[in-house]
Each structure stands twice: as C-alpha cells, then as structure tokens.
Image (tube, rainbow, N blue to C red; front, side, top):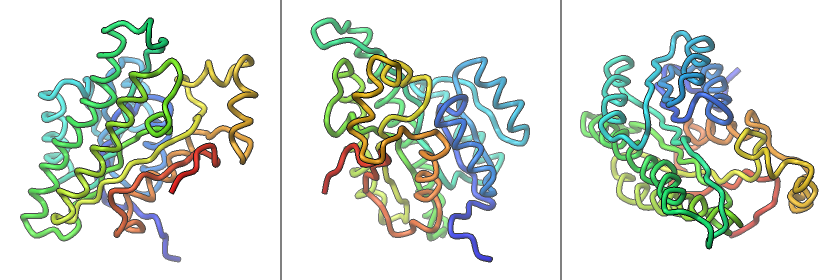
Length: 255
C-alpha cells in the first residue's frame, strides 16, 4: 500500500532536537524512513539523542553561532549527500511583562528564535540552491516553527511574540525568493503543546483559562504536533509554500 507521507532516504535536519517537539519529530521522521541530522545545544539532550538515535548525525552547538551552523550543514551534506528537509525548531523563552523585561531577556530570545532561525534557513537554503542548480528538480523543503503568539501577541512574552512574528515574515520571503529553485518554505504555528516550555500555563492557575479558548478542548501532545511538520516536508505537500499552518485545536482561526 502506498504511504502518502514518506521520507525514505531523505536527510532531515532538526534543530532543538533534544527535547519536546524536536525529540518527537526525530522519532517520527525516523519511523518515516528519514536519515537524521540532529542539532542540540545541551549535554543532557545530546546524550539522550545518542542513545535513542545511534545512526543519526548529531551536532552539538548553538543556532546563534553562524560558524557552527555552517559546519553542521557541511557535515550533514558530506554524511548523507545533501539536506532534503529542515525543521527549524530551536527556541527559548524568557518571560517578563514589557515594563520589566531586561535588555538581556529581549536579546536572548530574539537571538535564538529569530536570528537562529535565519542562520539555519540561510545555510540549508544555500545547500538546496546548489542542488537545484545541479539539476535536482525538488531539492528540499523547510519548515520554520513559529507560534500563534506571533500572530496575536502573548502577555509576558513580547520578545517571543516579536521573534515568532518575524519567523512568519522570513517564511514568506524565502518562499518567494526560492520558489524558482523548487525549494518550499512553510511555517507551523502551534498552540499550547505539552512540553516543559508550557508547564506554567498548563498548571492549575492558568489551565482552565487556556483550555476554554480551545474548541477541541485539549492541548497538543508533541507527537500530535509534529505530524504537520512531516506532512509539509514530504512530497504530499509538493505545491504548498509560503504558508502558515495553525495546529492549535481551533484556538486561533484566521483567513
């Protein structure tokens, strides 16, 4: 029987792969037949990845470091012959109300969640363009992980909301510039996903408030969230580019 979402023999790079959404994505992409290049900064996450994905190429470093990102991409291409998909996922939060946010809290989030996304987008895109010029008709696809916070704001997270909104602009611009090379670029905007990053809003104090805004009445598991990414990286989405797909149970609806 034909499988609609098939990543067999594709090399997929996932940033922020050592926990949460990135870790769930690595498991799903492997099950769909992909080779994996996994980027993670933390020692604990790297150790977990080495244990669970012994056949993967694991690169330890920060997406804010352009030299590291370029080296990781180069190593991945050498190992697997090219990068066919990027899940641009690494992200952090530093929560504070606007009037209390420090310059450091602002800059740390923007550096990882926006500049880090650009660094990976650019480095992988350059490799995909080279593949296109070498004659590959569909050299690859990129999925940037944004958030509903980038569409409607998020109290206590002006840094995060601004960065995630910037990711949407990067997605559309890259899709326009690189469509001629057959490179697709999309973003997904998750609602509340059950990860360490959302523990506070899923706690007793805020849980009912946030759940009441979700028509489907539940938060996303990481495993549910990443199915959308696999779809967008696969041939099943071959004519979808420049789009922002909301995965949120209906908590944000737009057209």
